[in-house]
Every structure is written in C-alpha cells, then in structure tokens.
Length: 90
Picture (tube, rainbow, N blue to C red):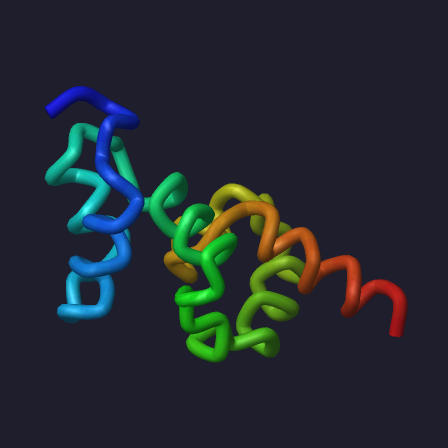
C-alpha cells in the first residue's frame, strides 16, 4: 500500500480489534503511528484516557521535547502540547 492511502474505516476497524496505532502505521508504510493516532482522535475513537498527564508534566519539566514525549507516550505532539499548555496555565 502507499503511504497515506489507508482507508479511514480500516484504521478504525483495526484499532477497535486491538491493533496499536504504531502497528497500523508501520503496516501502511509510516515510521510511527502519529498520523493514525491523529485520525483516530479526530474521529473520537482514540482513547485519550491512556495518557498519563503526570508523566507528561514530569518529562517536560525534565527537559524532554514535545516530540520526544509524544513518542514515549504513544500519542501526537498536538496532544502533548495541549497537556503542557494546561499544566503551564495552572
């Protein structure tokens, strides 16, 4: 398959069957699952509750980049930025 050509319905079906976004992404030629996670989040099926905001805050405070935290946490950079912004505004 070509990169970016995964049918949206297929992404959701695979995720609901228990496949992780990184696995789906690699199967379709992506380096990681960030694109897949973003699409799943936009569809409202990504389980954001998996995200440990305390860990995000600790990694950010330790000097980790948003990109590195997103990779470590298995989520998108956008979601990490949102958590970091929330933490900074408290």
